[in-house]
Figure 1 (cartoon, rainbow, N blue to C red):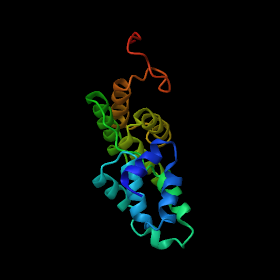
Figure 2: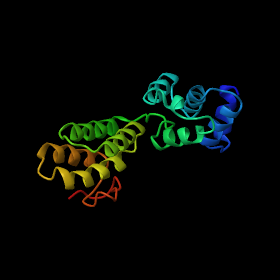
Figure 3: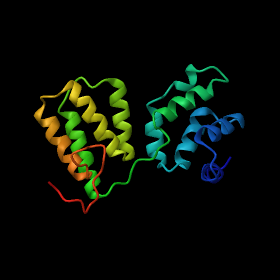
Length: 173
């Protein structure tokens, strides 16, 4: 299957999982199939190779016929979501979210993985809300964490209720 046909199948609504499994059934090695789907989904080849490289050895650990389990893991980790192209304001917000993260220790591994994926793919409000929940339990007295998180929230248009973005014309208190 050519790169164009992989992209056209995704554009036609075939899911990442279905396209990947089809490639594997057609004899494409799983690592090459994953890279092809990642690129077709919008990632630069270099980014796809780097992102999928974190899972080097995955396919060797799985038995033939277990490729669906491998692709499900990669999908859950956000491997097929391209990096976000952020404007200056959102890049600054992401920088503040990263500053909040760097001001703390003891981030649970699952939270670290999901936060990394959210920051990479531009789901910054989700990352902010996750950090706010986590911070309330783990770092309630860390002033640097909360200052960085507060500034990120301002840049993202989050009001007093962080779950509800304010419209740009909403009066600031």
